[in-house]
Amino acid sequence: PGVLVCDRLAARMTPVEQFLTVARGELGTREQPAGSNRQKYGAAYGLNGEPWCAIFLWWCLLKAGLGGVIPKTASVPVLYHWARANGYVNDTPTRGALSCMDWGGDGIPDHIGAIWEVTGSHTFDALEGNTSLDDRGSQSNGGIVALRHRVTQQVAGFIHLPVFEEATMAITPDDLSA
Image 1: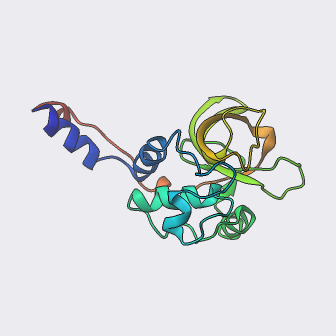
Image 2 (image 1 turned 135 degrees about the vertical axis):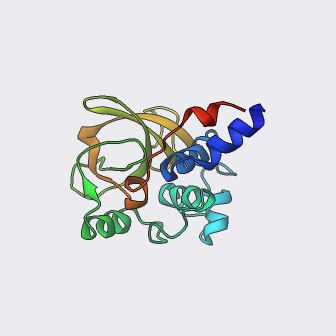
């Protein structure tokens, strides 16, 4: 009976929850060897050995059954400009939005992650590929999938994918009985 409940709930997961579940399952994955930018996401993408934060998100979307909702690009600025041109960018962090980090404050995003949780009025936690475990390492080329605490002041914009906005999950009492 418990399996049936889990199966029914999994089948009713929203696209954003499917995506975040895949991304969260990758926490701790490292490039091999260290410093090489070589990992399974780049291999699947067909561009291994290159910076891979955007490639990681592309892979997670693909594995969540959402392939094609973003352009196939390893470039965070290209992805950001595509999203802006389509009206998908704003300054509001929400669960599942893609956070385009701008370390230099020049308006050009350097790194990207997916918001796991909004933790305060100006803070959030993001699932990120090719970052470091803390602020001492490279934020944009650190070689690991990690959950990072970020501040909105470092963000060029948040990409809100329409596929995430269109669906909501409603759990009914029938889902919990078996």
